[in-house]
Length: 345
Ligand code: NAP
Image 1 (spheres, rainbow, N blue to C red):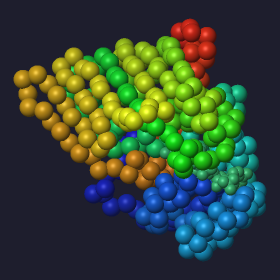
Image 2 (image 1 turned 135 degrees about the horizontal axis):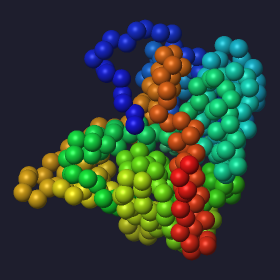
Image 3 (image 1 turned 60 degrees about the horizontal axis):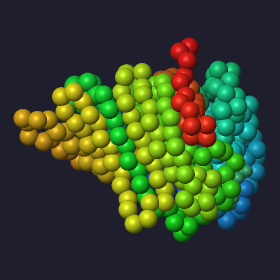
Image 4 (image 1 turned 120 degrees about the vertical axis):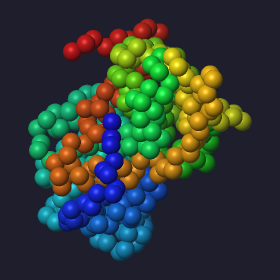
């Protein structure tokens, strides 16, 4: 799991990485830019690309009138650019990552790794083949609240964890900014929002409790206009012998919840919003509020140090492959109403 650099240590000043951004949509503007704009000593955005001019221009102006192009291959042809941040519709991840690596650029690409397992396997091939740094922008792997949870578990604050329950209920209406993106509504990858959002949760389960080794799920489509399915209950076990239940429901009318409960032999951890609570019989409750930017800065820090210092990235293609593999196995298990088990390699 990710360990932030010791902030008290004076970092050796290295040159900022010359970065190109491919895709200037919601995640680029609302999630990546706020982090990057505070890290100018580490990243210099030198060119952006969006295939429609309005969004390219808007991002360019927001970032200080940097040059923009409409064709990502033109950006890849820019010799100054060392690394690219790919923030595109999911079905383009493989093609653009491959082209970027062929052009000699380091790559950070948004989650999920790819639109299907075939392309995800090809992404693993790319990770093996190229010496350039590749990573997936799985921000939950850097999210301070989950890093703190891991610390508490490692310190034995609740003894051995044996069960985890994550309830994620919301009502995704058609006026939601993400629901308005056509590539999500006409998704070219299994599971729609369940996969798009669910890989985040799977990443956390795996980071905290080890690989998911078996499971079964049931799914539903309540509001087909937001995609193929919008509701799932997934029950699983992990290699550390933890039982899990993940409920993710995007059409919960009049109710929202995002809450994790971890049962340990000597206590319980509850995570809700930015708060972690530890409850143990006979001891006062411990409650902590964790300041967080949802891990976006952490992922860029990791990308930077991998490029400049050769540190291994935490959010590798391999980890993202495993997250997606679990998601797809869970979806398949719902169709067949049959458990899946991953064989040990
Ligand atoms: P989005 O708003 O639709 O952004 C995608 C952008 O790519 C759009 O501006 C689109 O332009 C542009 N585009 C499409 N095809 C292109 C091409 N061939 N060349 C250049 N630009 C192209 O979607 P989003 O919500 O930002 O999601 C993008 C990625 O970020 C997805 O992988 C998603 O899973 C991920 N994401 C991650 C998080 C997180 O928390 N980590 C949150 C949200 C999204 P047009 O709209 O003009 O077609």
